[in-house]
Image (cartoon, rainbow over all chains, first blue to last red; front, side, top):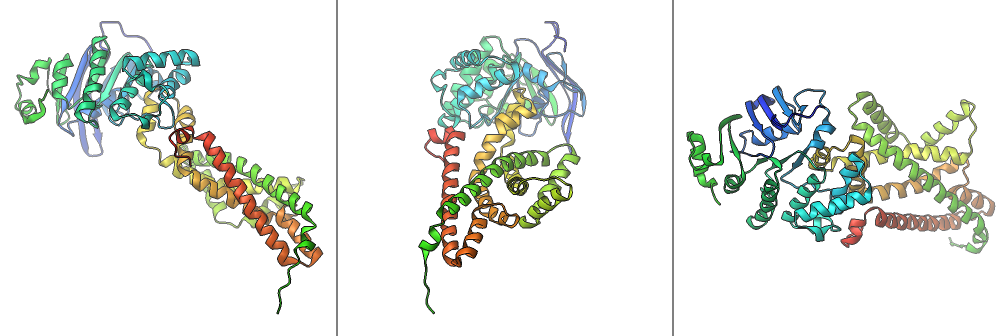
Amino acid sequence: MQQPPSSEPIVSLRDVQKSFGPLLVLDGVSFAVERGEVLALIGRSGSGKSTALRCIDRFEKVDGGEIVVCGHRVDRPDVDLRALRQDVGIVFQSYNLFPHLTIEQNITLAPCAVKGLAASQAKDLARKVLAQVGLEEKLHAYPEQLSGGQQQRAAIARSLAMQPKVMLFDEVTSALDPELTAEVLKVIEQLAADGMTMVMVTHEMGFAKGIADRIVFMHRGKVHETGPASILTTPTTPELTQFVGTGNLKS
Amino acid sequence: MSLQLDFPAVLERWPHFLAGAALTLELAAFSTVCGAVLGTLAAVGRGAHNSLIAGACKIYVEAIRNTPLLVQIFLVYFGLASLGLKFSAFTVAVAALTINVGAYTAEIMRAGFEAIPRGQIEAAEGLALSRLQIYWHIILLPAIERVYPALTSQFVLLMLASSVCSQISAEELTAVANYIQSDTYRAFETYIIVAVLYIILSLVMRAGFWGLGLVLFPRRRRLGTPL
Protein backbone atom coordinates (compact mmCIF):
# COMPACT_ATOMS: atom_id res chain seq x y z
CA MET A 1 0.00 0.00 0.00
CA GLN A 2 1.19 3.44 -0.90
CA GLN A 3 1.56 6.14 1.69
CA PRO A 4 -0.61 9.16 1.06
CA PRO A 5 1.18 12.45 0.56
CA SER A 6 0.97 14.58 3.66
CA SER A 7 -1.64 16.84 2.12
CA GLU A 8 -4.16 14.00 1.87
CA PRO A 9 -6.41 13.27 4.79
CA ILE A 10 -5.52 10.32 7.03
CA VAL A 11 -9.12 9.17 7.05
CA SER A 12 -11.73 10.01 4.48
CA LEU A 13 -15.28 8.74 4.07
CA ARG A 14 -17.23 9.59 0.93
CA ASP A 15 -20.93 8.88 0.64
CA VAL A 16 -20.73 5.81 2.86
CA GLN A 17 -23.83 3.61 3.02
CA LYS A 18 -24.43 0.87 5.53
CA SER A 19 -27.52 -1.12 6.46
CA PHE A 20 -28.14 -3.73 9.11
CA GLY A 21 -30.88 -5.75 7.45
CA PRO A 22 -33.70 -3.35 6.63
CA LEU A 23 -32.25 -0.68 8.93
CA LEU A 24 -30.29 2.03 7.12
CA VAL A 25 -27.60 3.03 9.62
CA LEU A 26 -25.31 5.17 7.46
CA ASP A 27 -27.02 7.15 4.74
CA GLY A 28 -24.33 8.81 2.66
CA VAL A 29 -21.85 9.78 5.35
CA SER A 30 -18.84 11.87 4.31
CA PHE A 31 -16.10 13.42 6.41
CA ALA A 32 -12.34 13.59 6.44
CA VAL A 33 -9.70 13.73 9.15
CA GLU A 34 -6.45 15.55 8.48
CA ARG A 35 -3.11 14.58 9.98
CA GLY A 36 -2.92 15.70 13.62
CA GLU A 37 -6.59 16.53 13.72
CA VAL A 38 -8.99 15.50 16.49
CA LEU A 39 -12.47 14.80 15.24
CA ALA A 40 -15.37 14.16 17.58
CA LEU A 41 -18.36 12.17 16.35
CA ILE A 42 -21.41 13.06 18.38
CA GLY A 43 -25.10 12.31 18.21
CA ARG A 44 -27.89 10.36 19.84
CA SER A 45 -27.77 6.64 20.39
CA GLY A 46 -28.63 4.99 17.09
CA SER A 47 -27.51 7.97 15.01
CA GLY A 48 -24.81 5.85 13.38
CA LYS A 49 -21.74 7.43 14.95
CA SER A 50 -20.28 4.21 16.38
CA THR A 51 -20.98 2.36 13.14
CA ALA A 52 -19.20 5.10 11.19
CA LEU A 53 -16.19 4.76 13.48
CA ARG A 54 -16.16 0.98 13.20
CA CYS A 55 -16.25 1.22 9.40
CA ILE A 56 -12.93 3.07 9.48
CA ASP A 57 -11.20 0.00 10.95
CA ARG A 58 -13.44 -2.30 8.93
CA PHE A 59 -15.18 -3.88 11.84
CA GLU A 60 -18.22 -3.21 9.70
CA LYS A 61 -18.25 -3.71 5.94
CA VAL A 62 -19.87 -0.85 4.06
CA ASP A 63 -22.53 -1.33 1.39
CA GLY A 64 -21.48 1.64 -0.69
CA GLY A 65 -19.25 4.68 -0.85
CA GLU A 66 -15.52 5.03 -0.42
CA ILE A 67 -13.33 4.88 2.69
CA VAL A 68 -9.62 5.62 2.49
CA VAL A 69 -7.53 5.24 5.66
CA CYS A 70 -3.79 5.89 5.51
CA GLY A 71 -3.87 4.96 1.83
CA HIS A 72 -5.84 1.73 2.35
CA ARG A 73 -9.05 1.41 0.38
CA VAL A 74 -11.11 0.09 3.26
CA ASP A 75 -14.32 -0.24 1.22
CA ARG A 76 -12.71 -2.72 -1.15
CA PRO A 77 -13.06 -6.44 -0.40
CA ASP A 78 -9.36 -7.04 -1.07
CA VAL A 79 -8.12 -4.56 1.53
CA ASP A 80 -5.17 -5.90 3.54
CA LEU A 81 -6.82 -5.92 6.95
CA ARG A 82 -3.66 -6.59 8.92
CA ALA A 83 -1.80 -3.76 7.21
CA LEU A 84 -4.75 -1.43 7.80
CA ARG A 85 -4.92 -2.34 11.47
CA GLN A 86 -1.25 -1.72 11.98
CA ASP A 87 -1.91 1.87 10.94
CA VAL A 88 -5.09 2.25 12.96
CA GLY A 89 -5.42 1.87 16.74
CA ILE A 90 -8.84 1.33 18.25
CA VAL A 91 -9.99 1.57 21.86
CA PHE A 92 -13.38 0.20 22.92
CA GLN A 93 -15.93 1.11 25.54
CA SER A 94 -15.43 -2.22 27.30
CA TYR A 95 -11.56 -2.00 27.37
CA ASN A 96 -11.21 -5.60 26.09
CA LEU A 97 -7.89 -6.22 27.76
CA PHE A 98 -6.90 -9.88 27.59
CA PRO A 99 -7.74 -11.17 31.10
CA HIS A 100 -5.22 -14.02 31.17
CA LEU A 101 -2.26 -11.80 30.35
CA THR A 102 -0.49 -9.26 32.53
CA ILE A 103 -0.62 -5.63 31.45
CA GLU A 104 2.90 -5.98 30.11
CA GLN A 105 1.95 -9.08 28.11
CA ASN A 106 -1.20 -7.34 26.84
CA ILE A 107 1.00 -4.58 25.48
CA THR A 108 3.92 -6.60 24.13
CA LEU A 109 1.84 -9.31 22.41
CA ALA A 110 1.02 -7.49 19.18
CA PRO A 111 4.37 -5.73 18.67
CA CYS A 112 6.12 -9.10 19.07
CA ALA A 113 3.63 -11.25 17.14
CA VAL A 114 2.80 -8.81 14.37
CA LYS A 115 5.87 -6.62 14.00
CA GLY A 116 8.41 -9.18 15.12
CA LEU A 117 9.84 -6.97 17.83
CA ALA A 118 12.35 -8.67 20.15
CA ALA A 119 11.02 -9.40 23.64
CA SER A 120 13.45 -7.03 25.36
CA GLN A 121 12.60 -4.17 23.00
CA ALA A 122 8.91 -4.84 23.46
CA LYS A 123 9.32 -4.67 27.22
CA ASP A 124 11.02 -1.28 26.95
CA LEU A 125 8.19 -0.18 24.72
CA ALA A 126 5.61 -1.39 27.27
CA ARG A 127 7.29 0.70 29.97
CA LYS A 128 7.31 3.73 27.70
CA VAL A 129 3.64 3.58 26.71
CA LEU A 130 2.56 2.79 30.26
CA ALA A 131 4.46 5.86 31.44
CA GLN A 132 2.53 7.83 28.84
CA VAL A 133 -0.75 6.84 30.48
CA GLY A 134 0.64 7.02 34.03
CA LEU A 135 0.50 3.32 34.85
CA GLU A 136 4.14 2.22 35.04
CA GLU A 137 3.60 0.55 38.39
CA LYS A 138 0.94 -1.77 36.92
CA LEU A 139 3.31 -3.48 34.49
CA HIS A 140 2.93 -6.89 36.12
CA ALA A 141 -0.66 -6.63 37.30
CA TYR A 142 -3.51 -8.53 35.71
CA PRO A 143 -6.39 -6.52 34.17
CA GLU A 144 -8.90 -7.50 36.85
CA GLN A 145 -6.62 -6.02 39.51
CA LEU A 146 -7.08 -2.59 37.93
CA SER A 147 -9.91 -0.09 38.21
CA GLY A 148 -12.01 0.62 35.13
CA GLY A 149 -10.16 3.85 34.43
CA GLN A 150 -6.81 2.12 34.78
CA GLN A 151 -7.93 -0.69 32.49
CA GLN A 152 -9.00 1.81 29.86
CA ARG A 153 -5.67 3.65 30.13
CA ALA A 154 -3.86 0.32 29.77
CA ALA A 155 -5.97 -0.41 26.67
CA ILE A 156 -4.90 2.95 25.23
CA ALA A 157 -1.27 2.09 26.00
CA ARG A 158 -1.69 -1.27 24.29
CA SER A 159 -2.93 0.49 21.18
CA LEU A 160 -0.15 3.08 21.30
CA ALA A 161 2.48 0.34 21.40
CA MET A 162 1.62 -0.48 17.80
CA GLN A 163 2.50 3.12 16.90
CA PRO A 164 -0.65 3.75 14.90
CA LYS A 165 -1.03 6.71 12.56
CA VAL A 166 -4.57 7.31 13.76
CA MET A 167 -6.43 6.35 16.92
CA LEU A 168 -10.13 5.56 17.12
CA PHE A 169 -11.97 5.88 20.43
CA ASP A 170 -15.42 4.28 20.66
CA GLU A 171 -17.19 5.79 23.69
CA VAL A 172 -14.20 4.95 25.81
CA THR A 173 -15.51 6.60 28.96
CA SER A 174 -19.14 5.47 28.79
CA ALA A 175 -18.60 2.67 31.30
CA LEU A 176 -16.78 4.87 33.82
CA ASP A 177 -17.86 7.10 36.67
CA PRO A 178 -16.95 10.81 36.45
CA GLU A 179 -13.73 10.53 38.44
CA LEU A 180 -12.36 7.67 36.35
CA THR A 181 -13.62 9.38 33.20
CA ALA A 182 -11.47 12.39 34.04
CA GLU A 183 -8.25 10.35 34.29
CA VAL A 184 -8.91 8.72 30.91
CA LEU A 185 -9.77 12.02 29.26
CA LYS A 186 -6.54 13.51 30.61
CA VAL A 187 -4.59 10.80 28.79
CA ILE A 188 -6.46 11.47 25.55
CA GLU A 189 -5.87 15.20 25.93
CA GLN A 190 -2.15 14.58 26.25
CA LEU A 191 -2.22 12.44 23.10
CA ALA A 192 -3.96 15.25 21.25
CA ALA A 193 -1.34 17.70 22.51
CA ASP A 194 1.35 15.34 21.21
CA GLY A 195 -0.20 15.59 17.75
CA MET A 196 -1.93 12.21 17.46
CA THR A 197 -4.63 12.03 14.82
CA MET A 198 -7.82 10.90 16.51
CA VAL A 199 -11.44 10.13 15.80
CA MET A 200 -13.61 9.77 18.85
CA VAL A 201 -17.19 8.87 19.45
CA THR A 202 -18.12 10.54 22.69
CA HIS A 203 -20.98 11.59 24.88
CA GLU A 204 -18.74 13.95 26.84
CA MET A 205 -19.76 17.20 25.18
CA GLY A 206 -17.62 19.36 27.44
CA PHE A 207 -14.63 17.26 26.56
CA ALA A 208 -15.42 17.27 22.85
CA LYS A 209 -15.68 21.03 22.98
CA GLY A 210 -12.35 21.35 24.73
CA ILE A 211 -10.30 18.97 22.63
CA ALA A 212 -11.86 18.51 19.20
CA ASP A 213 -10.66 20.48 16.19
CA ARG A 214 -13.84 19.52 14.45
CA ILE A 215 -17.24 18.19 15.43
CA VAL A 216 -19.36 15.92 13.27
CA PHE A 217 -22.93 15.76 14.52
CA MET A 218 -24.73 12.72 13.20
CA HIS A 219 -28.47 12.39 13.03
CA ARG A 220 -30.43 9.49 11.52
CA GLY A 221 -27.45 8.10 9.66
CA LYS A 222 -26.39 11.38 8.09
CA VAL A 223 -23.82 14.04 8.92
CA HIS A 224 -26.28 16.63 10.04
CA GLU A 225 -24.00 19.45 11.05
CA THR A 226 -20.26 19.82 11.07
CA GLY A 227 -17.82 22.52 12.02
CA PRO A 228 -15.35 23.66 14.68
CA ALA A 229 -16.03 22.99 18.34
CA SER A 230 -17.84 26.31 18.56
CA ILE A 231 -20.88 24.81 16.84
CA LEU A 232 -21.67 23.19 20.16
CA THR A 233 -22.28 26.62 21.68
CA THR A 234 -23.85 28.15 18.58
CA PRO A 235 -25.56 25.33 16.72
CA THR A 236 -27.33 26.20 13.48
CA THR A 237 -29.69 23.23 13.09
CA PRO A 238 -32.62 22.64 15.41
CA GLU A 239 -31.52 19.01 15.94
CA LEU A 240 -28.08 19.96 17.25
CA THR A 241 -29.61 22.77 19.28
CA GLN A 242 -31.92 20.26 20.88
CA PHE A 243 -29.13 17.71 21.32
CA VAL A 244 -26.76 20.10 23.13
CA GLY A 245 -29.69 21.64 24.95
CA THR A 246 -30.84 18.42 26.60
CA GLY A 247 -28.21 18.60 29.28
CA ASN A 248 -25.53 17.04 27.14
CA LEU A 249 -23.30 20.08 27.35
CA LYS A 250 -21.71 19.65 30.72
CA SER A 251 -18.16 20.48 31.51
CA MET B 1 -24.87 -67.71 53.74
CA SER B 2 -21.58 -66.45 54.89
CA LEU B 3 -19.18 -64.05 53.29
CA GLN B 4 -15.57 -65.07 53.53
CA LEU B 5 -13.03 -62.71 52.11
CA ASP B 6 -9.48 -63.79 51.52
CA PHE B 7 -7.54 -60.74 50.46
CA PRO B 8 -4.01 -62.12 51.02
CA ALA B 9 -4.61 -64.80 48.39
CA VAL B 10 -5.27 -62.09 45.86
CA LEU B 11 -2.90 -59.43 47.16
CA GLU B 12 0.10 -61.68 46.72
CA ARG B 13 -0.33 -60.92 43.01
CA TRP B 14 0.37 -57.25 43.73
CA PRO B 15 3.10 -56.87 41.06
CA HIS B 16 0.49 -57.74 38.44
CA PHE B 17 -2.01 -55.28 39.86
CA LEU B 18 0.68 -52.62 39.88
CA ALA B 19 1.70 -53.32 36.29
CA GLY B 20 -1.94 -53.20 35.22
CA ALA B 21 -2.51 -49.90 37.02
CA ALA B 22 0.62 -48.47 35.45
CA LEU B 23 -0.54 -49.48 31.99
CA THR B 24 -3.98 -47.98 32.61
CA LEU B 25 -2.36 -44.71 33.63
CA GLU B 26 -0.13 -44.83 30.58
CA LEU B 27 -3.12 -45.46 28.29
CA ALA B 28 -4.94 -42.56 29.90
CA ALA B 29 -1.95 -40.23 29.65
CA PHE B 30 -1.30 -40.88 25.96
CA SER B 31 -4.94 -40.67 24.96
CA THR B 32 -5.52 -37.58 27.09
CA VAL B 33 -2.70 -35.69 25.38
CA CYS B 34 -3.59 -36.88 21.87
CA GLY B 35 -7.32 -36.52 22.49
CA ALA B 36 -6.92 -32.98 23.82
CA VAL B 37 -5.09 -31.96 20.65
CA LEU B 38 -7.52 -33.80 18.35
CA GLY B 39 -10.56 -32.46 20.18
CA THR B 40 -9.29 -28.88 20.11
CA LEU B 41 -8.60 -29.11 16.39
CA ALA B 42 -12.06 -30.58 15.82
CA ALA B 43 -13.64 -27.77 17.85
CA VAL B 44 -11.77 -25.18 15.79
CA GLY B 45 -12.74 -27.10 12.64
CA ARG B 46 -16.42 -27.03 13.53
CA GLY B 47 -16.28 -23.25 13.53
CA ALA B 48 -14.41 -23.09 10.21
CA HIS B 49 -15.78 -20.98 7.35
CA ASN B 50 -15.09 -23.89 5.02
CA SER B 51 -18.28 -25.95 5.25
CA LEU B 52 -16.49 -29.12 4.17
CA ILE B 53 -14.15 -28.95 7.19
CA ALA B 54 -16.97 -27.89 9.52
CA GLY B 55 -19.19 -30.71 8.26
CA ALA B 56 -16.47 -33.35 8.56
CA CYS B 57 -15.76 -32.28 12.15
CA LYS B 58 -19.45 -32.39 13.01
CA ILE B 59 -19.87 -35.88 11.54
CA TYR B 60 -16.84 -37.11 13.47
CA VAL B 61 -18.11 -35.71 16.76
CA GLU B 62 -21.65 -37.00 16.32
CA ALA B 63 -20.61 -40.44 15.05
CA ILE B 64 -18.38 -40.99 18.07
CA ARG B 65 -20.78 -39.60 20.65
CA ASN B 66 -23.54 -41.88 19.42
CA THR B 67 -21.70 -45.21 19.33
CA PRO B 68 -20.39 -47.34 22.22
CA LEU B 69 -16.70 -47.12 23.08
CA LEU B 70 -16.35 -50.89 22.91
CA VAL B 71 -17.67 -50.95 19.36
CA GLN B 72 -15.25 -48.16 18.42
CA ILE B 73 -12.38 -50.15 19.89
CA PHE B 74 -13.38 -53.23 17.90
CA LEU B 75 -13.73 -51.15 14.76
CA VAL B 76 -10.20 -49.83 15.09
CA TYR B 77 -8.84 -53.23 16.18
CA PHE B 78 -10.44 -55.34 13.45
CA GLY B 79 -10.39 -52.53 10.91
CA LEU B 80 -6.62 -52.18 11.10
CA ALA B 81 -6.24 -55.95 11.12
CA SER B 82 -8.35 -56.41 7.98
CA LEU B 83 -6.19 -53.80 6.26
CA GLY B 84 -3.27 -56.05 7.06
CA LEU B 85 -1.80 -53.56 9.52
CA LYS B 86 -0.40 -55.03 12.69
CA PHE B 87 -0.25 -52.88 15.78
CA SER B 88 0.12 -53.80 19.43
CA ALA B 89 -3.01 -53.90 21.55
CA PHE B 90 -1.63 -50.86 23.40
CA THR B 91 -1.34 -48.78 20.22
CA VAL B 92 -4.81 -49.77 19.09
CA ALA B 93 -6.19 -48.92 22.52
CA VAL B 94 -4.54 -45.47 22.53
CA ALA B 95 -5.81 -44.79 19.01
CA ALA B 96 -9.38 -45.80 19.84
CA LEU B 97 -9.44 -43.92 23.16
CA THR B 98 -7.98 -40.84 21.46
CA ILE B 99 -10.64 -40.88 18.76
CA ASN B 100 -13.30 -41.35 21.43
CA VAL B 101 -12.21 -38.69 23.90
CA GLY B 102 -11.38 -36.29 21.05
CA ALA B 103 -15.07 -36.07 20.13
CA TYR B 104 -16.14 -35.28 23.69
CA THR B 105 -13.29 -32.83 24.10
CA ALA B 106 -14.37 -31.10 20.89
CA GLU B 107 -17.81 -30.43 22.33
CA ILE B 108 -16.40 -29.14 25.61
CA MET B 109 -13.85 -26.94 23.85
CA ARG B 110 -16.54 -25.59 21.53
CA ALA B 111 -18.45 -24.41 24.59
CA GLY B 112 -15.23 -22.81 25.83
CA PHE B 113 -14.60 -21.05 22.51
CA GLU B 114 -18.16 -19.77 22.38
CA ALA B 115 -17.82 -18.31 25.85
CA ILE B 116 -15.05 -15.95 24.74
CA PRO B 117 -16.57 -12.45 24.45
CA ARG B 118 -16.68 -11.04 20.94
CA GLY B 119 -14.87 -7.95 22.21
CA GLN B 120 -11.75 -9.99 22.98
CA ILE B 121 -11.52 -11.09 19.37
CA GLU B 122 -12.22 -7.59 18.05
CA ALA B 123 -9.50 -6.16 20.25
CA ALA B 124 -7.07 -8.75 18.92
CA GLU B 125 -8.13 -8.08 15.33
CA GLY B 126 -7.71 -4.38 15.96
CA LEU B 127 -4.11 -5.10 16.95
CA ALA B 128 -3.55 -6.77 13.56
CA LEU B 129 -3.12 -10.29 14.95
CA SER B 130 -3.81 -13.07 12.44
CA ARG B 131 -6.59 -15.63 12.92
CA LEU B 132 -4.13 -18.26 14.01
CA GLN B 133 -2.42 -15.88 16.44
CA ILE B 134 -5.80 -14.93 17.89
CA TYR B 135 -6.67 -18.58 18.50
CA TRP B 136 -3.29 -19.30 19.99
CA HIS B 137 -2.71 -16.21 22.14
CA ILE B 138 -6.18 -14.89 22.93
CA ILE B 139 -8.79 -17.64 22.74
CA LEU B 140 -7.16 -20.95 23.62
CA LEU B 141 -6.11 -20.53 27.27
CA PRO B 142 -9.16 -18.56 28.45
CA ALA B 143 -11.38 -21.13 26.67
CA ILE B 144 -9.59 -24.01 28.40
CA GLU B 145 -9.79 -22.14 31.69
CA ARG B 146 -13.57 -21.81 31.41
CA VAL B 147 -14.13 -25.51 30.78
CA TYR B 148 -11.22 -26.91 32.79
CA PRO B 149 -13.34 -28.74 35.40
CA ALA B 150 -15.38 -30.37 32.61
CA LEU B 151 -12.20 -31.35 30.77
CA THR B 152 -10.75 -32.85 33.94
CA SER B 153 -13.89 -34.97 34.46
CA GLN B 154 -13.86 -36.07 30.84
CA PHE B 155 -10.27 -37.27 30.98
CA VAL B 156 -10.79 -39.06 34.29
CA LEU B 157 -13.82 -40.72 32.74
CA LEU B 158 -11.61 -41.75 29.82
CA MET B 159 -9.19 -43.43 32.21
CA LEU B 160 -12.06 -45.36 33.82
CA ALA B 161 -13.54 -46.24 30.43
CA SER B 162 -10.18 -47.62 29.32
CA SER B 163 -11.14 -50.75 31.27
CA VAL B 164 -13.01 -51.97 28.19
CA CYS B 165 -9.63 -52.22 26.44
CA SER B 166 -9.34 -55.50 28.35
CA GLN B 167 -11.53 -56.84 25.53
CA ILE B 168 -8.69 -56.54 23.03
CA SER B 169 -6.27 -57.97 25.58
CA ALA B 170 -4.43 -54.80 26.39
CA GLU B 171 -2.87 -55.72 29.73
CA GLU B 172 -4.43 -52.88 31.67
CA LEU B 173 -5.85 -53.04 35.16
CA THR B 174 -9.18 -54.68 34.36
CA ALA B 175 -7.58 -57.29 32.09
CA VAL B 176 -5.13 -58.12 34.87
CA ALA B 177 -8.02 -58.45 37.28
CA ASN B 178 -9.80 -60.82 34.93
CA TYR B 179 -6.76 -63.12 34.85
CA ILE B 180 -6.26 -63.01 38.58
CA GLN B 181 -9.85 -63.77 39.48
CA SER B 182 -10.03 -66.71 37.08
CA ASP B 183 -6.76 -67.95 38.53
CA THR B 184 -7.63 -67.53 42.20
CA TYR B 185 -11.42 -67.90 42.10
CA ARG B 186 -11.50 -64.83 44.32
CA ALA B 187 -13.53 -62.57 42.05
CA PHE B 188 -15.09 -60.32 44.70
CA GLU B 189 -11.79 -59.61 46.47
CA THR B 190 -10.08 -59.01 43.14
CA TYR B 191 -12.58 -56.46 41.94
CA ILE B 192 -12.67 -54.69 45.31
CA ILE B 193 -8.94 -54.20 45.02
CA VAL B 194 -9.29 -53.10 41.41
CA ALA B 195 -12.00 -50.61 42.35
CA VAL B 196 -9.77 -49.13 45.04
CA LEU B 197 -6.91 -48.91 42.56
CA TYR B 198 -9.17 -47.08 40.06
CA ILE B 199 -10.13 -44.63 42.80
CA ILE B 200 -6.46 -44.02 43.52
CA LEU B 201 -5.74 -43.55 39.80
CA SER B 202 -8.62 -41.05 39.57
CA LEU B 203 -7.21 -39.10 42.48
CA VAL B 204 -3.77 -39.15 40.91
CA MET B 205 -5.19 -37.79 37.65
CA ARG B 206 -7.21 -35.09 39.40
CA ALA B 207 -4.12 -34.04 41.33
CA GLY B 208 -2.21 -33.94 38.05
CA PHE B 209 -4.82 -31.70 36.45
CA TRP B 210 -4.85 -29.45 39.50
CA GLY B 211 -1.07 -29.07 39.22
CA LEU B 212 -1.26 -28.46 35.48
CA GLY B 213 -3.89 -25.79 36.17
CA LEU B 214 -1.41 -23.94 38.39
CA VAL B 215 1.04 -23.83 35.49
CA LEU B 216 -1.49 -22.99 32.78
CA PHE B 217 -3.35 -20.29 34.66
CA PRO B 218 -0.81 -18.19 36.59
CA ARG B 219 -3.36 -15.41 36.97
CA ARG B 220 -5.57 -17.65 39.12
CA ARG B 221 -2.60 -18.61 41.25
CA ARG B 222 -1.69 -14.94 41.71
CA LEU B 223 -5.24 -13.92 42.55
CA GLY B 224 -5.68 -16.88 44.88
CA THR B 225 -8.46 -18.55 42.88
CA PRO B 226 -6.87 -21.70 41.43
CA LEU B 227 -9.19 -24.05 39.57
